[in-house]
Image (cartoon, rainbow over the protein chains, first blue to last red):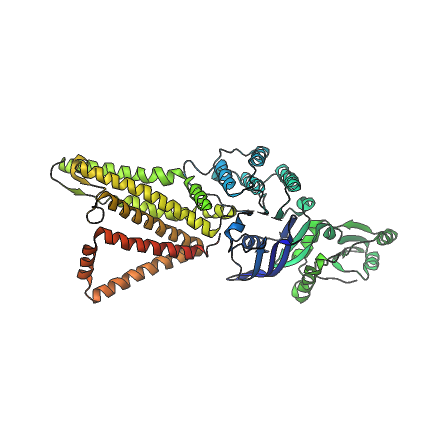
Length: 326
Length: 230
């Protein structure tokens, strides 16, 4: 399938920093992709460039086969709600929730007013309320309503649920999945609530300091690392020949994170060695990938770079630098 | 074109700013001058020129700046492109200028017929520039209102793109152009001939020149629009 979003060699430099550093990435159409990474990793900049709000310093961006900064018609097939999304702000009568929805409905041919109304009800968002008077969470909810009801071919949310309570967040996941099932589209979602959103994401792309450090199917990532703990000697024996991302030793006990999927035979071996195995959650893996392992230096960048390209084809990924080899 | 109209409608969601406020301010302005005129002349041969109609033109410049400043981020979220947004906002400016210009010229006719509202007041009539037949007044008002809106839009865009520093550079650049122009005119002792030139071309000629200036401002604004980010 041709990718809905395709960027190549994308770089965005600001005066004192490089927000995006030579990014090459394809996002498949009709998929939900999570864009993950720490604050300042470049997630918002990437989405702004994809949506034509910002210009790249170098590189190529193509969305649905066209250029977002040249093609105004293309933009009508996209919606991008930012975390800090600003709405028109003026005095009486004020720009209301209903004004925002009405405006959005003019620009999206597939706008679903019924969906918007039911989402409003679900989130308890009063249509007659002036947007600037909404709480943080309610403003986020409005962004979600617009983003979903627009039914745009490319739908992008940047940290869409700042200030939303867990119930409302769950509602967002459920409604997004339900609507996606009926009307598949390309969804790109940046979030810090990784484990919460994990069930939603088919793929994850992790950015760190402007580079893609992981780009893989969520299922592949999920089984790709295991925490092994027990007696230090046993852990060392088990980890021999494997890539170890991180290890901590307290007295004679050691806990290590071992990369790569485990086979049944490995599990049996762990049992005999009296080791405790625990699969890392998506969030923990992303934390490793996104530079939590602060090894830095030349070896610190070698690992991630490897993981980018082949990750799509190959199974296990090695997102983090090799820190300790047993 | 369709999207341009939608963008204009999007702006008009702020009905108060674009309709009630300009006429409210102008109406209040007018009432004060009418009272002053009535107190001064009582409708006899006195002529009271006010020039206070300038308020609505200044208002248009502010409206132009706000049209960019307040609404652009949400428009971009909704996939409205730079070109559509600029064209739609221009359409709004031209539409408002046409309607309001006509209203101003009609009010000038009423002012003339009623002997300055029975008080010798020249509020909607301004010597030289807005003193012709109604259709010329209309054209002049239309051009100047549009020009002011475009000028304001450009300010809003420069601020969005380059922030306060950009704004300072923008204003400084304009002052520089004016100062250089004035210096050249002064050194050539050209002021009297410039005065003669404006007397000769009259309101119609001046309107034409202002229309050219309006187009220049619109073009400059568009060049900035193409680089604007949110």
